[in-house]
Length: 289
Length: 137
Image 1: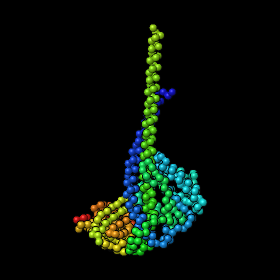
Image 2: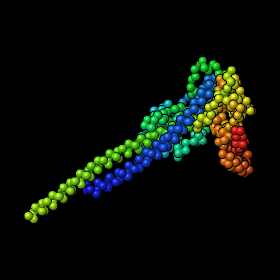
Image 3: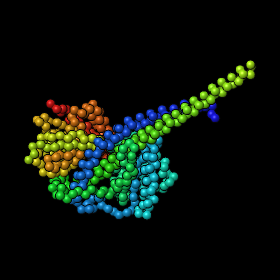
Image 4: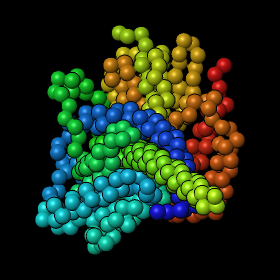
């Protein structure tokens, strides 16, 4: 049986932990709101660009631009988005495991699969499991998920693709569903696959192109890649905050439960001590009589 | 024929504008571009420059930076990297950026890959200052 002092000490330490998890939850909640707003604000741009691109690509032959042409299965690049920091539930583990699975499943399909990892946690998870696949690691870029960051990433990938270093590029990230639900999502970035548009609406629009259709397309395609990375970054960021918020929420709740249990134990021990003392006094008084 | 154009301006960060306007002048790839209601469908890239639109007799100016412009059914969609309305521009910052770009250009040689970057920055700063001077009257 632990002494009164011991129990009191434990209550104190659990309380401290609870304070930290509570604070982390608050911070995550505030960050989540901002990240969510950013993700929502980025949607119209991506959607418009997508529709413009679909319109354009439909009129072009399949392989009129290198970024559109299917080159068959050669070397693939997988861009994995994780967080730099932990304490966010299964956020990093889920997406990292999915990356490992992707590599295992597609080993036969491709000559090689290279990994570019965004975020420290993904690197830590995968460096012992698939060390030979990791080609590049970007750390600490999540904190400022700006368009510029995504653009740099996008340009790098487009350059590598055009130099035929890779024949297919995928991105793997946590899509934001709600604060509790994140969905691990795999998207093909390159070659670009424009969404099909309905025929009848497409007929109505025949643009004048300035300077030419080809040049507009050549301009817009790399942009599409950048935007896709930007969206993945924002979604992943929002997901991370959401995951951390719910993880810290349940941690705080567990701490509260533990404090209740310990308090009960403490009170019982206190009462037992008092009873014991009383009995000693009474029996002492008895013996004097 | 519709009387008005619907102007939608979007950047990766937010929807900047969504308004009914009478007339738009945009910096197209092949030069200034005037758009009125009833324009044929058009898709063009845009240069760094100044986009102007007229709404109920008032002229509004927006500094835009690289993008696309699509006209379709009297809806003008502008996709740009950045867009700043005249009254949103921080003139001090723009001037500082101009100064920095000018300094950098003096020291860099034309072959340096940073040259083009700084030149673009210079262009943006000039446009921003120009647009900031034209607040709505």
